[in-house]
Image (cartoon, rainbow, N blue to C red; front, side, top):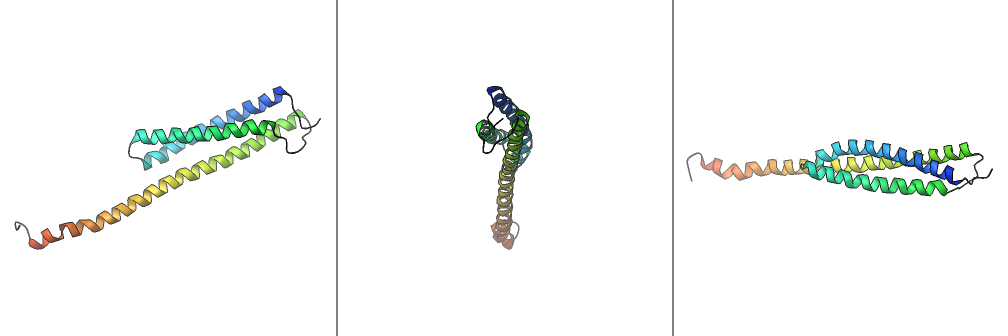
Length: 142
């Protein structure tokens, strides 16, 4: 049997791939929300950004799964081997997409931390200068 598959096999591959994408997406959404809550003080903003990232993830993942289900770069013998090869390639892709998403979330969090540290350092330097003249004059003097 060549690498072509029937409609039922394509649908099986798409169904399994979609289930895998949903499971990975749920993990990303739960984990990513913790990262985003640390970045955004407003919980609603963190939730909104999390949803937007989830939509992007699902769109890319399901689109790739749909393409992978019909793309045959080499010949595969047998239906079981066909399904296993397709699912394996989808798992590799979802793993890569998962790592990329986590890297983006970590970068967002790290940029926020750097900005907070810079603001704290600037704020720490300004405080003595702002209070300096009043301290030099002493209490009660204007």
